[in-house]
Each structure stands twice: as structure tokens, then as C-alpha cells.
Length: 490
Image (cartoon, rainbow, N blue to C red; front, side, top):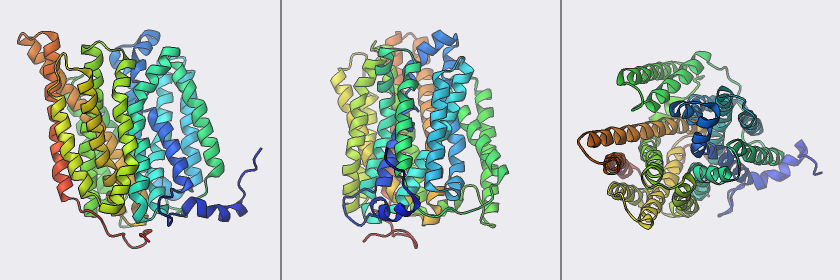
């Protein structure tokens, strides 16, 4: 058995982990974190195809079964804002171990769940571990990779944060062909265990932890506020407006209180989430752009499979396989997009990508009851390719605008707003589609054409979010100057 890395060995491994001066070289610490992030983020969508089996086994309604995904999203939104403080307080190895052990524990609990309530508890624990990984990856990347090479490395990160959710339904469809829904967790658990074990053996700490007190009032306000907001958004179209608006209103109020309290705490230097990140103009624009893009991205991810399964009669596995090339295209383009960003900056990528995204969504709004599958495939691949032109440069330029002491807070805020924007986009587009379909059906349209009519409005709404992305893309600079203390280009 290979001996574990001792303290004295760390120095000789530092070059391998943190050297970014050599062009085209990715530090090993980033490779390990990308692998772990891919595994944990895959689980955000991996239960999509298992809902019918859960309804049958636990005798729950469709609305109740949706909590398998809603609970994951709620937990992510509640926990991510806390990670800015957490990542500054602990070492890289401690944060990684916490995330992977928590995720593996939740996976094991979900696999053996004797009841639906225990399954939900397992998903909550899974999500708590997942919530730490992406901010940890982003913060470490910004710390150890020089500015001249960040685009290429961030492109590799795109593989984890965009391809994993896209592959979740396909992976679950393949697994469900071989066995029960429990096998999904049975496959994920040993993979997570191996990634966690070998990653922890090889990881070295990056940076020094800072000891600070935690504001428990901030924790409560943040967790409750984001939970109420995401839950309210997830109920759009499924509950009365008075009930939905109540949850959303409570969430907005608590988040506003959280923001006000963080501003007050910034005077003493101990905020849970440092909102001085929003004073950096390029970061603030990037945050808004990514939120609008994620609304359209995750909303369209749900709409197309619904059309393929409910209207065209494909199985969940067939629908997953049809949309899989788009997810793969986004991930494979990421590193190439990053290299172009390193040479030419953001505008030559983000502006054409945003325009192409709007065009693709408008084309999707024109699909009919019998649109050929090859056309759907090409449009979807084009949409995902355009999103790859957006995500990698915007992640890089936005976080690159921050000074090093704000990296963890910036990546945490970005992750939290992604969850909120994704929930909002999915809920609004599905609600819009349902309302339009019901209206057309009531006026005499047959069910198939009513469904397509609702789909048209939903994709056009996604295109509207894309127009916002175009406007913000025009306001982005091509590059930002590295703030004082950042790892600059060589």
C-alpha cells in the first residue's frame, strides 16, 4: 500500500500542485477538485427519471415525489452562502474531506432509505456536501492559477458544472434499465468513495485558513431566506398565487435582512458573506449575466425532455440520449473556449454566444408536433455550444475582478444565485407553458397543439432572458486588471 503524504513531503509536491507558470499545464489540485465536483453535481439531476419508480414504491403523489429534486436545490441554496466563511476558516484538505464525507454519507442513507422521508433526508445531506465543492473549486483555481492561464483551466471546470447536470438524466436512464432506483445511489457511492479517498491522499493545502467568529444570526437569515425563496419559486404554477407569493415574500424579506446585517458586520470585518464583491463592477455585471443565462439554461433543460417524453412518446432514456450530445458539446468546448479567452479576452466569445443563444431559443419556440429529431438535436447542440461561449469567459472575468481575500465570498455568492436563478427559470417557464397550454385547450385546441403552443411561449420567455444576456455582454470588458495581491499573468 502506498504510504500517505507526510508533512515533509508537501514541499516537493508544491510545484506539481501550484505551478501555473508553464502554459498549458493544469495544477493537479484543480484536476482532483474537478473530478470530485463532477461526481457530486451529477446528482442534482440524476433522479429525474426515477420519479415514477418512487411514486410506485412509496405510494406518494407526483408533487410529493418532486421533493427528491426540490430538497436538493433548497439545501444547495441554503448552504452555499455559508461556504464563503467556511472556506476561509478551514484548510483545503479539511474542506474537501468535509464535502466528500458528507456527500457519501447522504448517498448511503438515500440508498438504504426505508421510507420517502429518509430518502429526502439523504438527499439533503448529499446536497450539503455538494454545496461546498463548487466554491472550493473556484476559490482554489483563482488562488493557484495565473491570470494568463485561467481561461483554459476554467474551461476544464465547465466540464463539471455544465456537463454533469446534462448527463444526469441519461445516466439515471441507463442505470434504471439494469435495476431499481436504489442502484443509482449504489453506483454513485463507490465512485464518490474512490474519488474522495485518492483525492484526499494527494491534496495539499492551498493558502492559510483565517480564524474568525461565525455570526449565527447570519446563518439563520441566509438559510431561511434562500430556502423560502427557492421553495416559493418551485411552487409557481403548482399552488395558488397567494400561497406562492407568501413564500417568495418571506424569502425576499429575510434575504434583505441578511444583506443589511452583512453590511453592518462588514464594519467589524466578520461578515458571513462579504458583499463588497458587488462593488466590483465587472463582477457585478458577470453575476447578473450568469443569473439570466442560468434561467434560460436550466429552464430549457426541462422543457425539451418534457416535449420528447409527454408529446413525442420517447422513453426517458431515449430523451436523455437525444439531449446528451448537447451537454457533451458544452463540456468539450469549454477548454477550447478558455484558450481563446486567454488570447483574445471575453467579448469576442460572450457577445456571439449570447446572440446565438437567443437565436437557438427562438428556433426551439418554432418546434411542431412532428419536428424531425435531427433538427431538435442540431438546435440543442447549437444552444449548448453558445452557452459554452458564455459560461467559461464570464466565470473567469467575473472572479478575476476580485481581490484574493474575496475569492471565496465571490464564488459562494455566484453559486447561490445560480441555484435561485435556475429555480426561477425552471418554475417560470414551466408555469408559463402550463398556463398557455390550458388556455389553448380551453379555447378548443387539441391536447398536442395546446402543448406545443405552451412550449412556444416558454421558449420565447427563455429567449427574453437571453436578450438580457446580450445587453450585459455588451457591457463587459474584454479583460480586467489583476487586483493587488492576485496571482498575475507572467
